[in-house]
Amino acid sequence: MIFLIGLLISIALILVGIVRFKIHPFFVLLFAAILYGFITGMNVPQIISAINDGFGSIMGKIGLIIFFGVVIGTVLEKSGGAMVIATRLIKLIGGKSIHLAMMLTGYLLSIPVFADSAFIIMNSLNKALSDKAKVSYAGTTAALALGLMATHVMVPPTPGPIAAAGILGAELGSVIVWGLLISSLALIPCYFFATRIASKVKVAIVLETSGARPEKPKLFLSLITIVVPIVLIVMKSLFDYPEWNLKTSNVYPIIAFLGSPVIALLIGVLLSLALPNTLDERVFSTTGWFGDAVRIAAPIILITGAGGIFGAMLQNSGMADFIKEYFSEMSIGLFLPFLLAACLKTAQGSSTVALITTASIIAPMMPSLGLDDAFLKTMTVLAIGAGSTVVSHANDSFFWVLTQLTGMDVKQGNQVQTMGTLILGVSAMFIIFCVTQIVG
Image 1 (tube, one colour):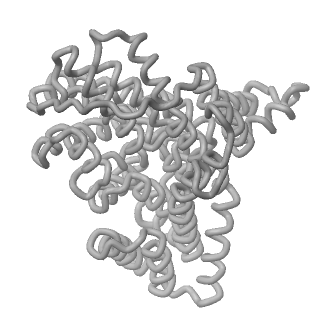
Image 2 (cartoon, one colour):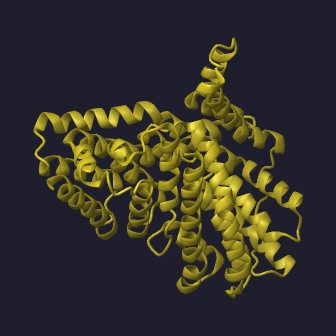
Image 3 (cartoon, helix red, strand yellow):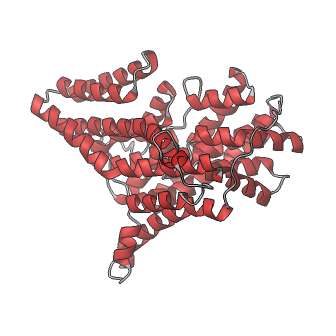
């Protein structure tokens, strides 16, 4: 039982450190991993080895992938490309379906752009369209926020799902395809929540005068920056599918190279350079857009590395054998990662931290939980993503971005955002369970 005691103490330390003392998650995860090692009787060389190997291994797999994904999102945001995509999508859907337009726009934008940033980009447009169409601002805000959250936690190249997939060894193309399917289905009940329930919340619309007009790159260039990397990664996954025997094709070496996540996202970075009007120090310098991307990506990469350390410590301690002995007959499967992610999300607020921490804890337990085949690894990533939406409330930065920009008070924020994320997470987990019963 020392393994369970050590894990519970480590999780308690993570929550207290982040929530109560506001310590950076990297240091909390690192010290929690070291404490777990000592509690479970690991010797000093084993602990040092877990620190070095855990951090180095995960960074070698996904460090650059996370960074390139952040660069693409930053350039899209700063160049105005994200707004171009949003505006065109809303025109296509039409002004009579504001809720659907907001939800689908958020769904698309949050694949490359962080949910918080995408909401800031979209809020003024959401406000103006809600006022023009005379529909509830709270309802359209719920639709936008839930669309943003769906892909933020379940569809790479958003950093959280990338990190979870890397830690669990899930195939990234598979996570993208299934993530798109499951997250879109999970938004169906969210749409009805936004139109029927959240719309009853009364929030006044205060229109601001617009400032300087942002740049407007071409729609085609904005879209290919997102679409090309995803298509390349998915193509490689299709060629790697064993039943199709496509590895013998003459084009496979090219697809394998271009479709490897690090190369695909690097291509996305290069394509994004076509978006700015001019390529100068505003884009390339340490104080420019690339510098902003480094500052955004660094904490995520470090937290992911600390999660890798935690996972290596658990693996080296013999935790997997403990789980196999005591829990293998319980058939809890995907519900354990979902519930653990939900607890961590609710307790400390960050979906990304919940994703990375849960993946790190679950990784050495995968065989014991019966989740170690390729398909179930993908489903585990998505179950963790679903859990990491449950729920967004006062300790989540996104909650405050939403309430402060819209003028909602805390009660209204709970009615719109907290309840909405609960519906999104539970719906996604229900769909994941159904898919595993059908496909598995």
